[in-house]
Length: 365
Image (cartoon, rainbow, N blue to C red):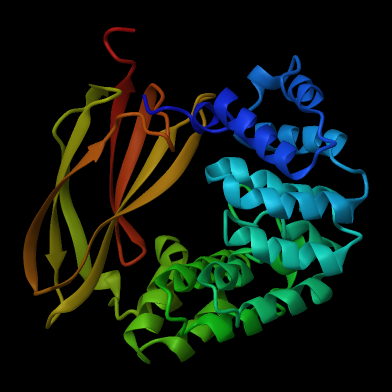
């Protein structure tokens, strides 16, 4: 099993390093008290983000209570701390700087060049979206790619592991000027964030995103990359407008036959081999998006659907044999559970064939 992030960051060594760095910048720092506050009775049970905020709380108790003084110290300390541990700096701003916008927002731009302020800027957006987005729009023109990325990533309506921006789920129009400014950014790192932001918006406003993507598509290679990545969720959900945008044809005359599995029962950790025939009954070549939809059994017996792309290709009329494997080993992002699982083949957003298999616990359990 891969090592958990909470065991990689906020180790005894990194906590000591942080304390030493603060002590060098602030003579009044009580290192002993800081360590006592960090290593309280809850420390070992905390997950990664909770550990981060726990350290923030400990800093709050051992730094000057006046936010401007504490922030000045943290700005001096930040360049010496790296990795996830450094997220305590923007977290401190998000926790205690909401009444100090003129200090806090420039600090978030500074900290994001060293770690990331994408989570910390969200409480400011929640407090005053119009005011916050004025800063983000300015950041979109910054010379540093990390600051430009923050302009897009920070306002994603559904940023994973971040505070949901309900105001932008309802009405994302304040986001759009930032994305327009960044759509031709020279950094792929920034453009990918633009695509992820649009993908978030598409879950609540698909037509709005498709209108934007139609304007951007086929202009240049960079915009095409954004559009393809932005529409991935719409394509997985079988949105017909998105399918047509990318030239995927009418699935009416495309069939899937003889979907077979190499086994009907297997154990967690095995690979499942599946095979089927794709029948293209059109007069000429047709662009096809093939996907596998898997209904995974969850711990309490319910199912969760996941869609995997098999292939996107232009097929000639006729029959085409397709064979692939599905890995059923546990991963950092997904654990498998015993029970009856279902798979289906999807052609241009339309389900064409189904099959089932039983997944068992490993033999050594």
